[in-house]
Image (tube, rainbow over all chains, first blue to last red; front, side, top):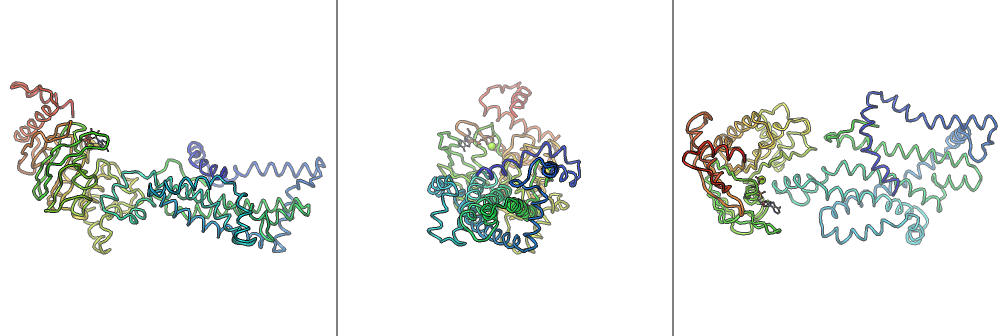
Length: 280
Length: 263
Ligand SMILES: Nc1ncnc2c1ncn2[C@@H]1O[C@H](COP(=O)(O)OP(=O)(O)OP(=O)(O)O)[C@@H](O)[C@H]1O
Ligand SMILES: [Mg+2]
């Protein structure tokens, strides 16, 4: 859950700096952000070159890069990325749909909320790994158990985000819907869901982050392909460069997937009246 | 014909917000409700439009008792309450989604023209000034062509110039469709400019103290003696409603000053 909370709270905090840095161009800001990793990487590379460390357990960037390219050339990396991304996509889709549906109903109806929310909160506090054995028993060791695990991970932040947001929709806007005699379904579609959309985007981004976390858990505990498999494989064969290459691949596709969500939802949020400027 | 028949309202916390309120409002009539803060004016409007049910009595429009919001009754709140995710045009069209598209667009264009916001049809609510936003809210309430339009202190957050301008807009729109208007205000000038009849309420529990005829010819001249006369009567009644007996024969100015402090 910690990762999800980080994503959520990191957002509004950018106001002050956002203003100050707004003058700088997009490229400059990107450059500033990438400065620290570059310096660290160059430093480590230098240390290995100068013989201060043999770099066997912590391979220098050049070796990681070479491994990355090698895996890519062989088509291995693409295959593993495709498998992992497919699992996340399937689990994410299921988790988002279920989380939205259940969260919306629980946010709308106090009765449903009293009925199911305590159970949901209890289930939510179960550590992800604890589900693995029972899911393997129920769904077998192949895709179904992994996708279920990811869906569970995505479900909770989405459920919580949607429910909380719907409960906190301004009563005054709900009254506008009542004055125009909206049915419950129309109230949901025309007032509640649009009103919660900004929170919703944050919730599904948190869900996506957890999806990537849970796919690693699933793949570490038994998979024959996928980036998680690459991690385990690298450990068993003593190839730290392969492990780091897989971690880098996780970072890249995780960021890209988050970006896709942000870009895909941006057109629906143009109306937002927010203090913070555009930030990447 | 709108009949408010012995309406009473006791909130769950025990507050008696309304007690035995009777008002008859004819079609096309403009009734303005004034009264001290907390004397149940908002409660009354919410009961009339069916947002909150009264605990005693009933509200009847054209022989139908009102228990839930009706197409025939529109309401404008103190704040514009525009939906921030819809453009101005879509906000105005909110209550007529069931009409065919061409009809919808024609009506929205016409009413936006009428409130002087034709050039703002495509903008987001956040880009409007307070007065413009309230004009959009008026347009939104009018576009389904309600028989009765309720306004709860619609201009109280606006400056005097904008307020006078919006009063003109309301009068112009009213003369197009002649809906029944029931409006709550804290501004005695506004009451006398708009009303055919002014209902003065008194608090604890909220009831009607008196009704004052304001049947002056339209358009109304705020400087005329007749206007001033009605205004003084309203101010005197308000003063009495607050149970502060400052009205004496020679106390006209004193009365006005006393009430003016309250408003
Ligand atoms: N939802 C509520 N629950 C309990 N009491 C309420 C509620 N709404 C209003 N009241 C009480 O009912 C009384 C009348 O309130 P109301 O809002 O109708 O007054 P008002 O005449 O509109 O006042 P104002 O001029 O300040 O808007 C007040 O004493 C208020 O405290
Ligand atoms: Mg009020």
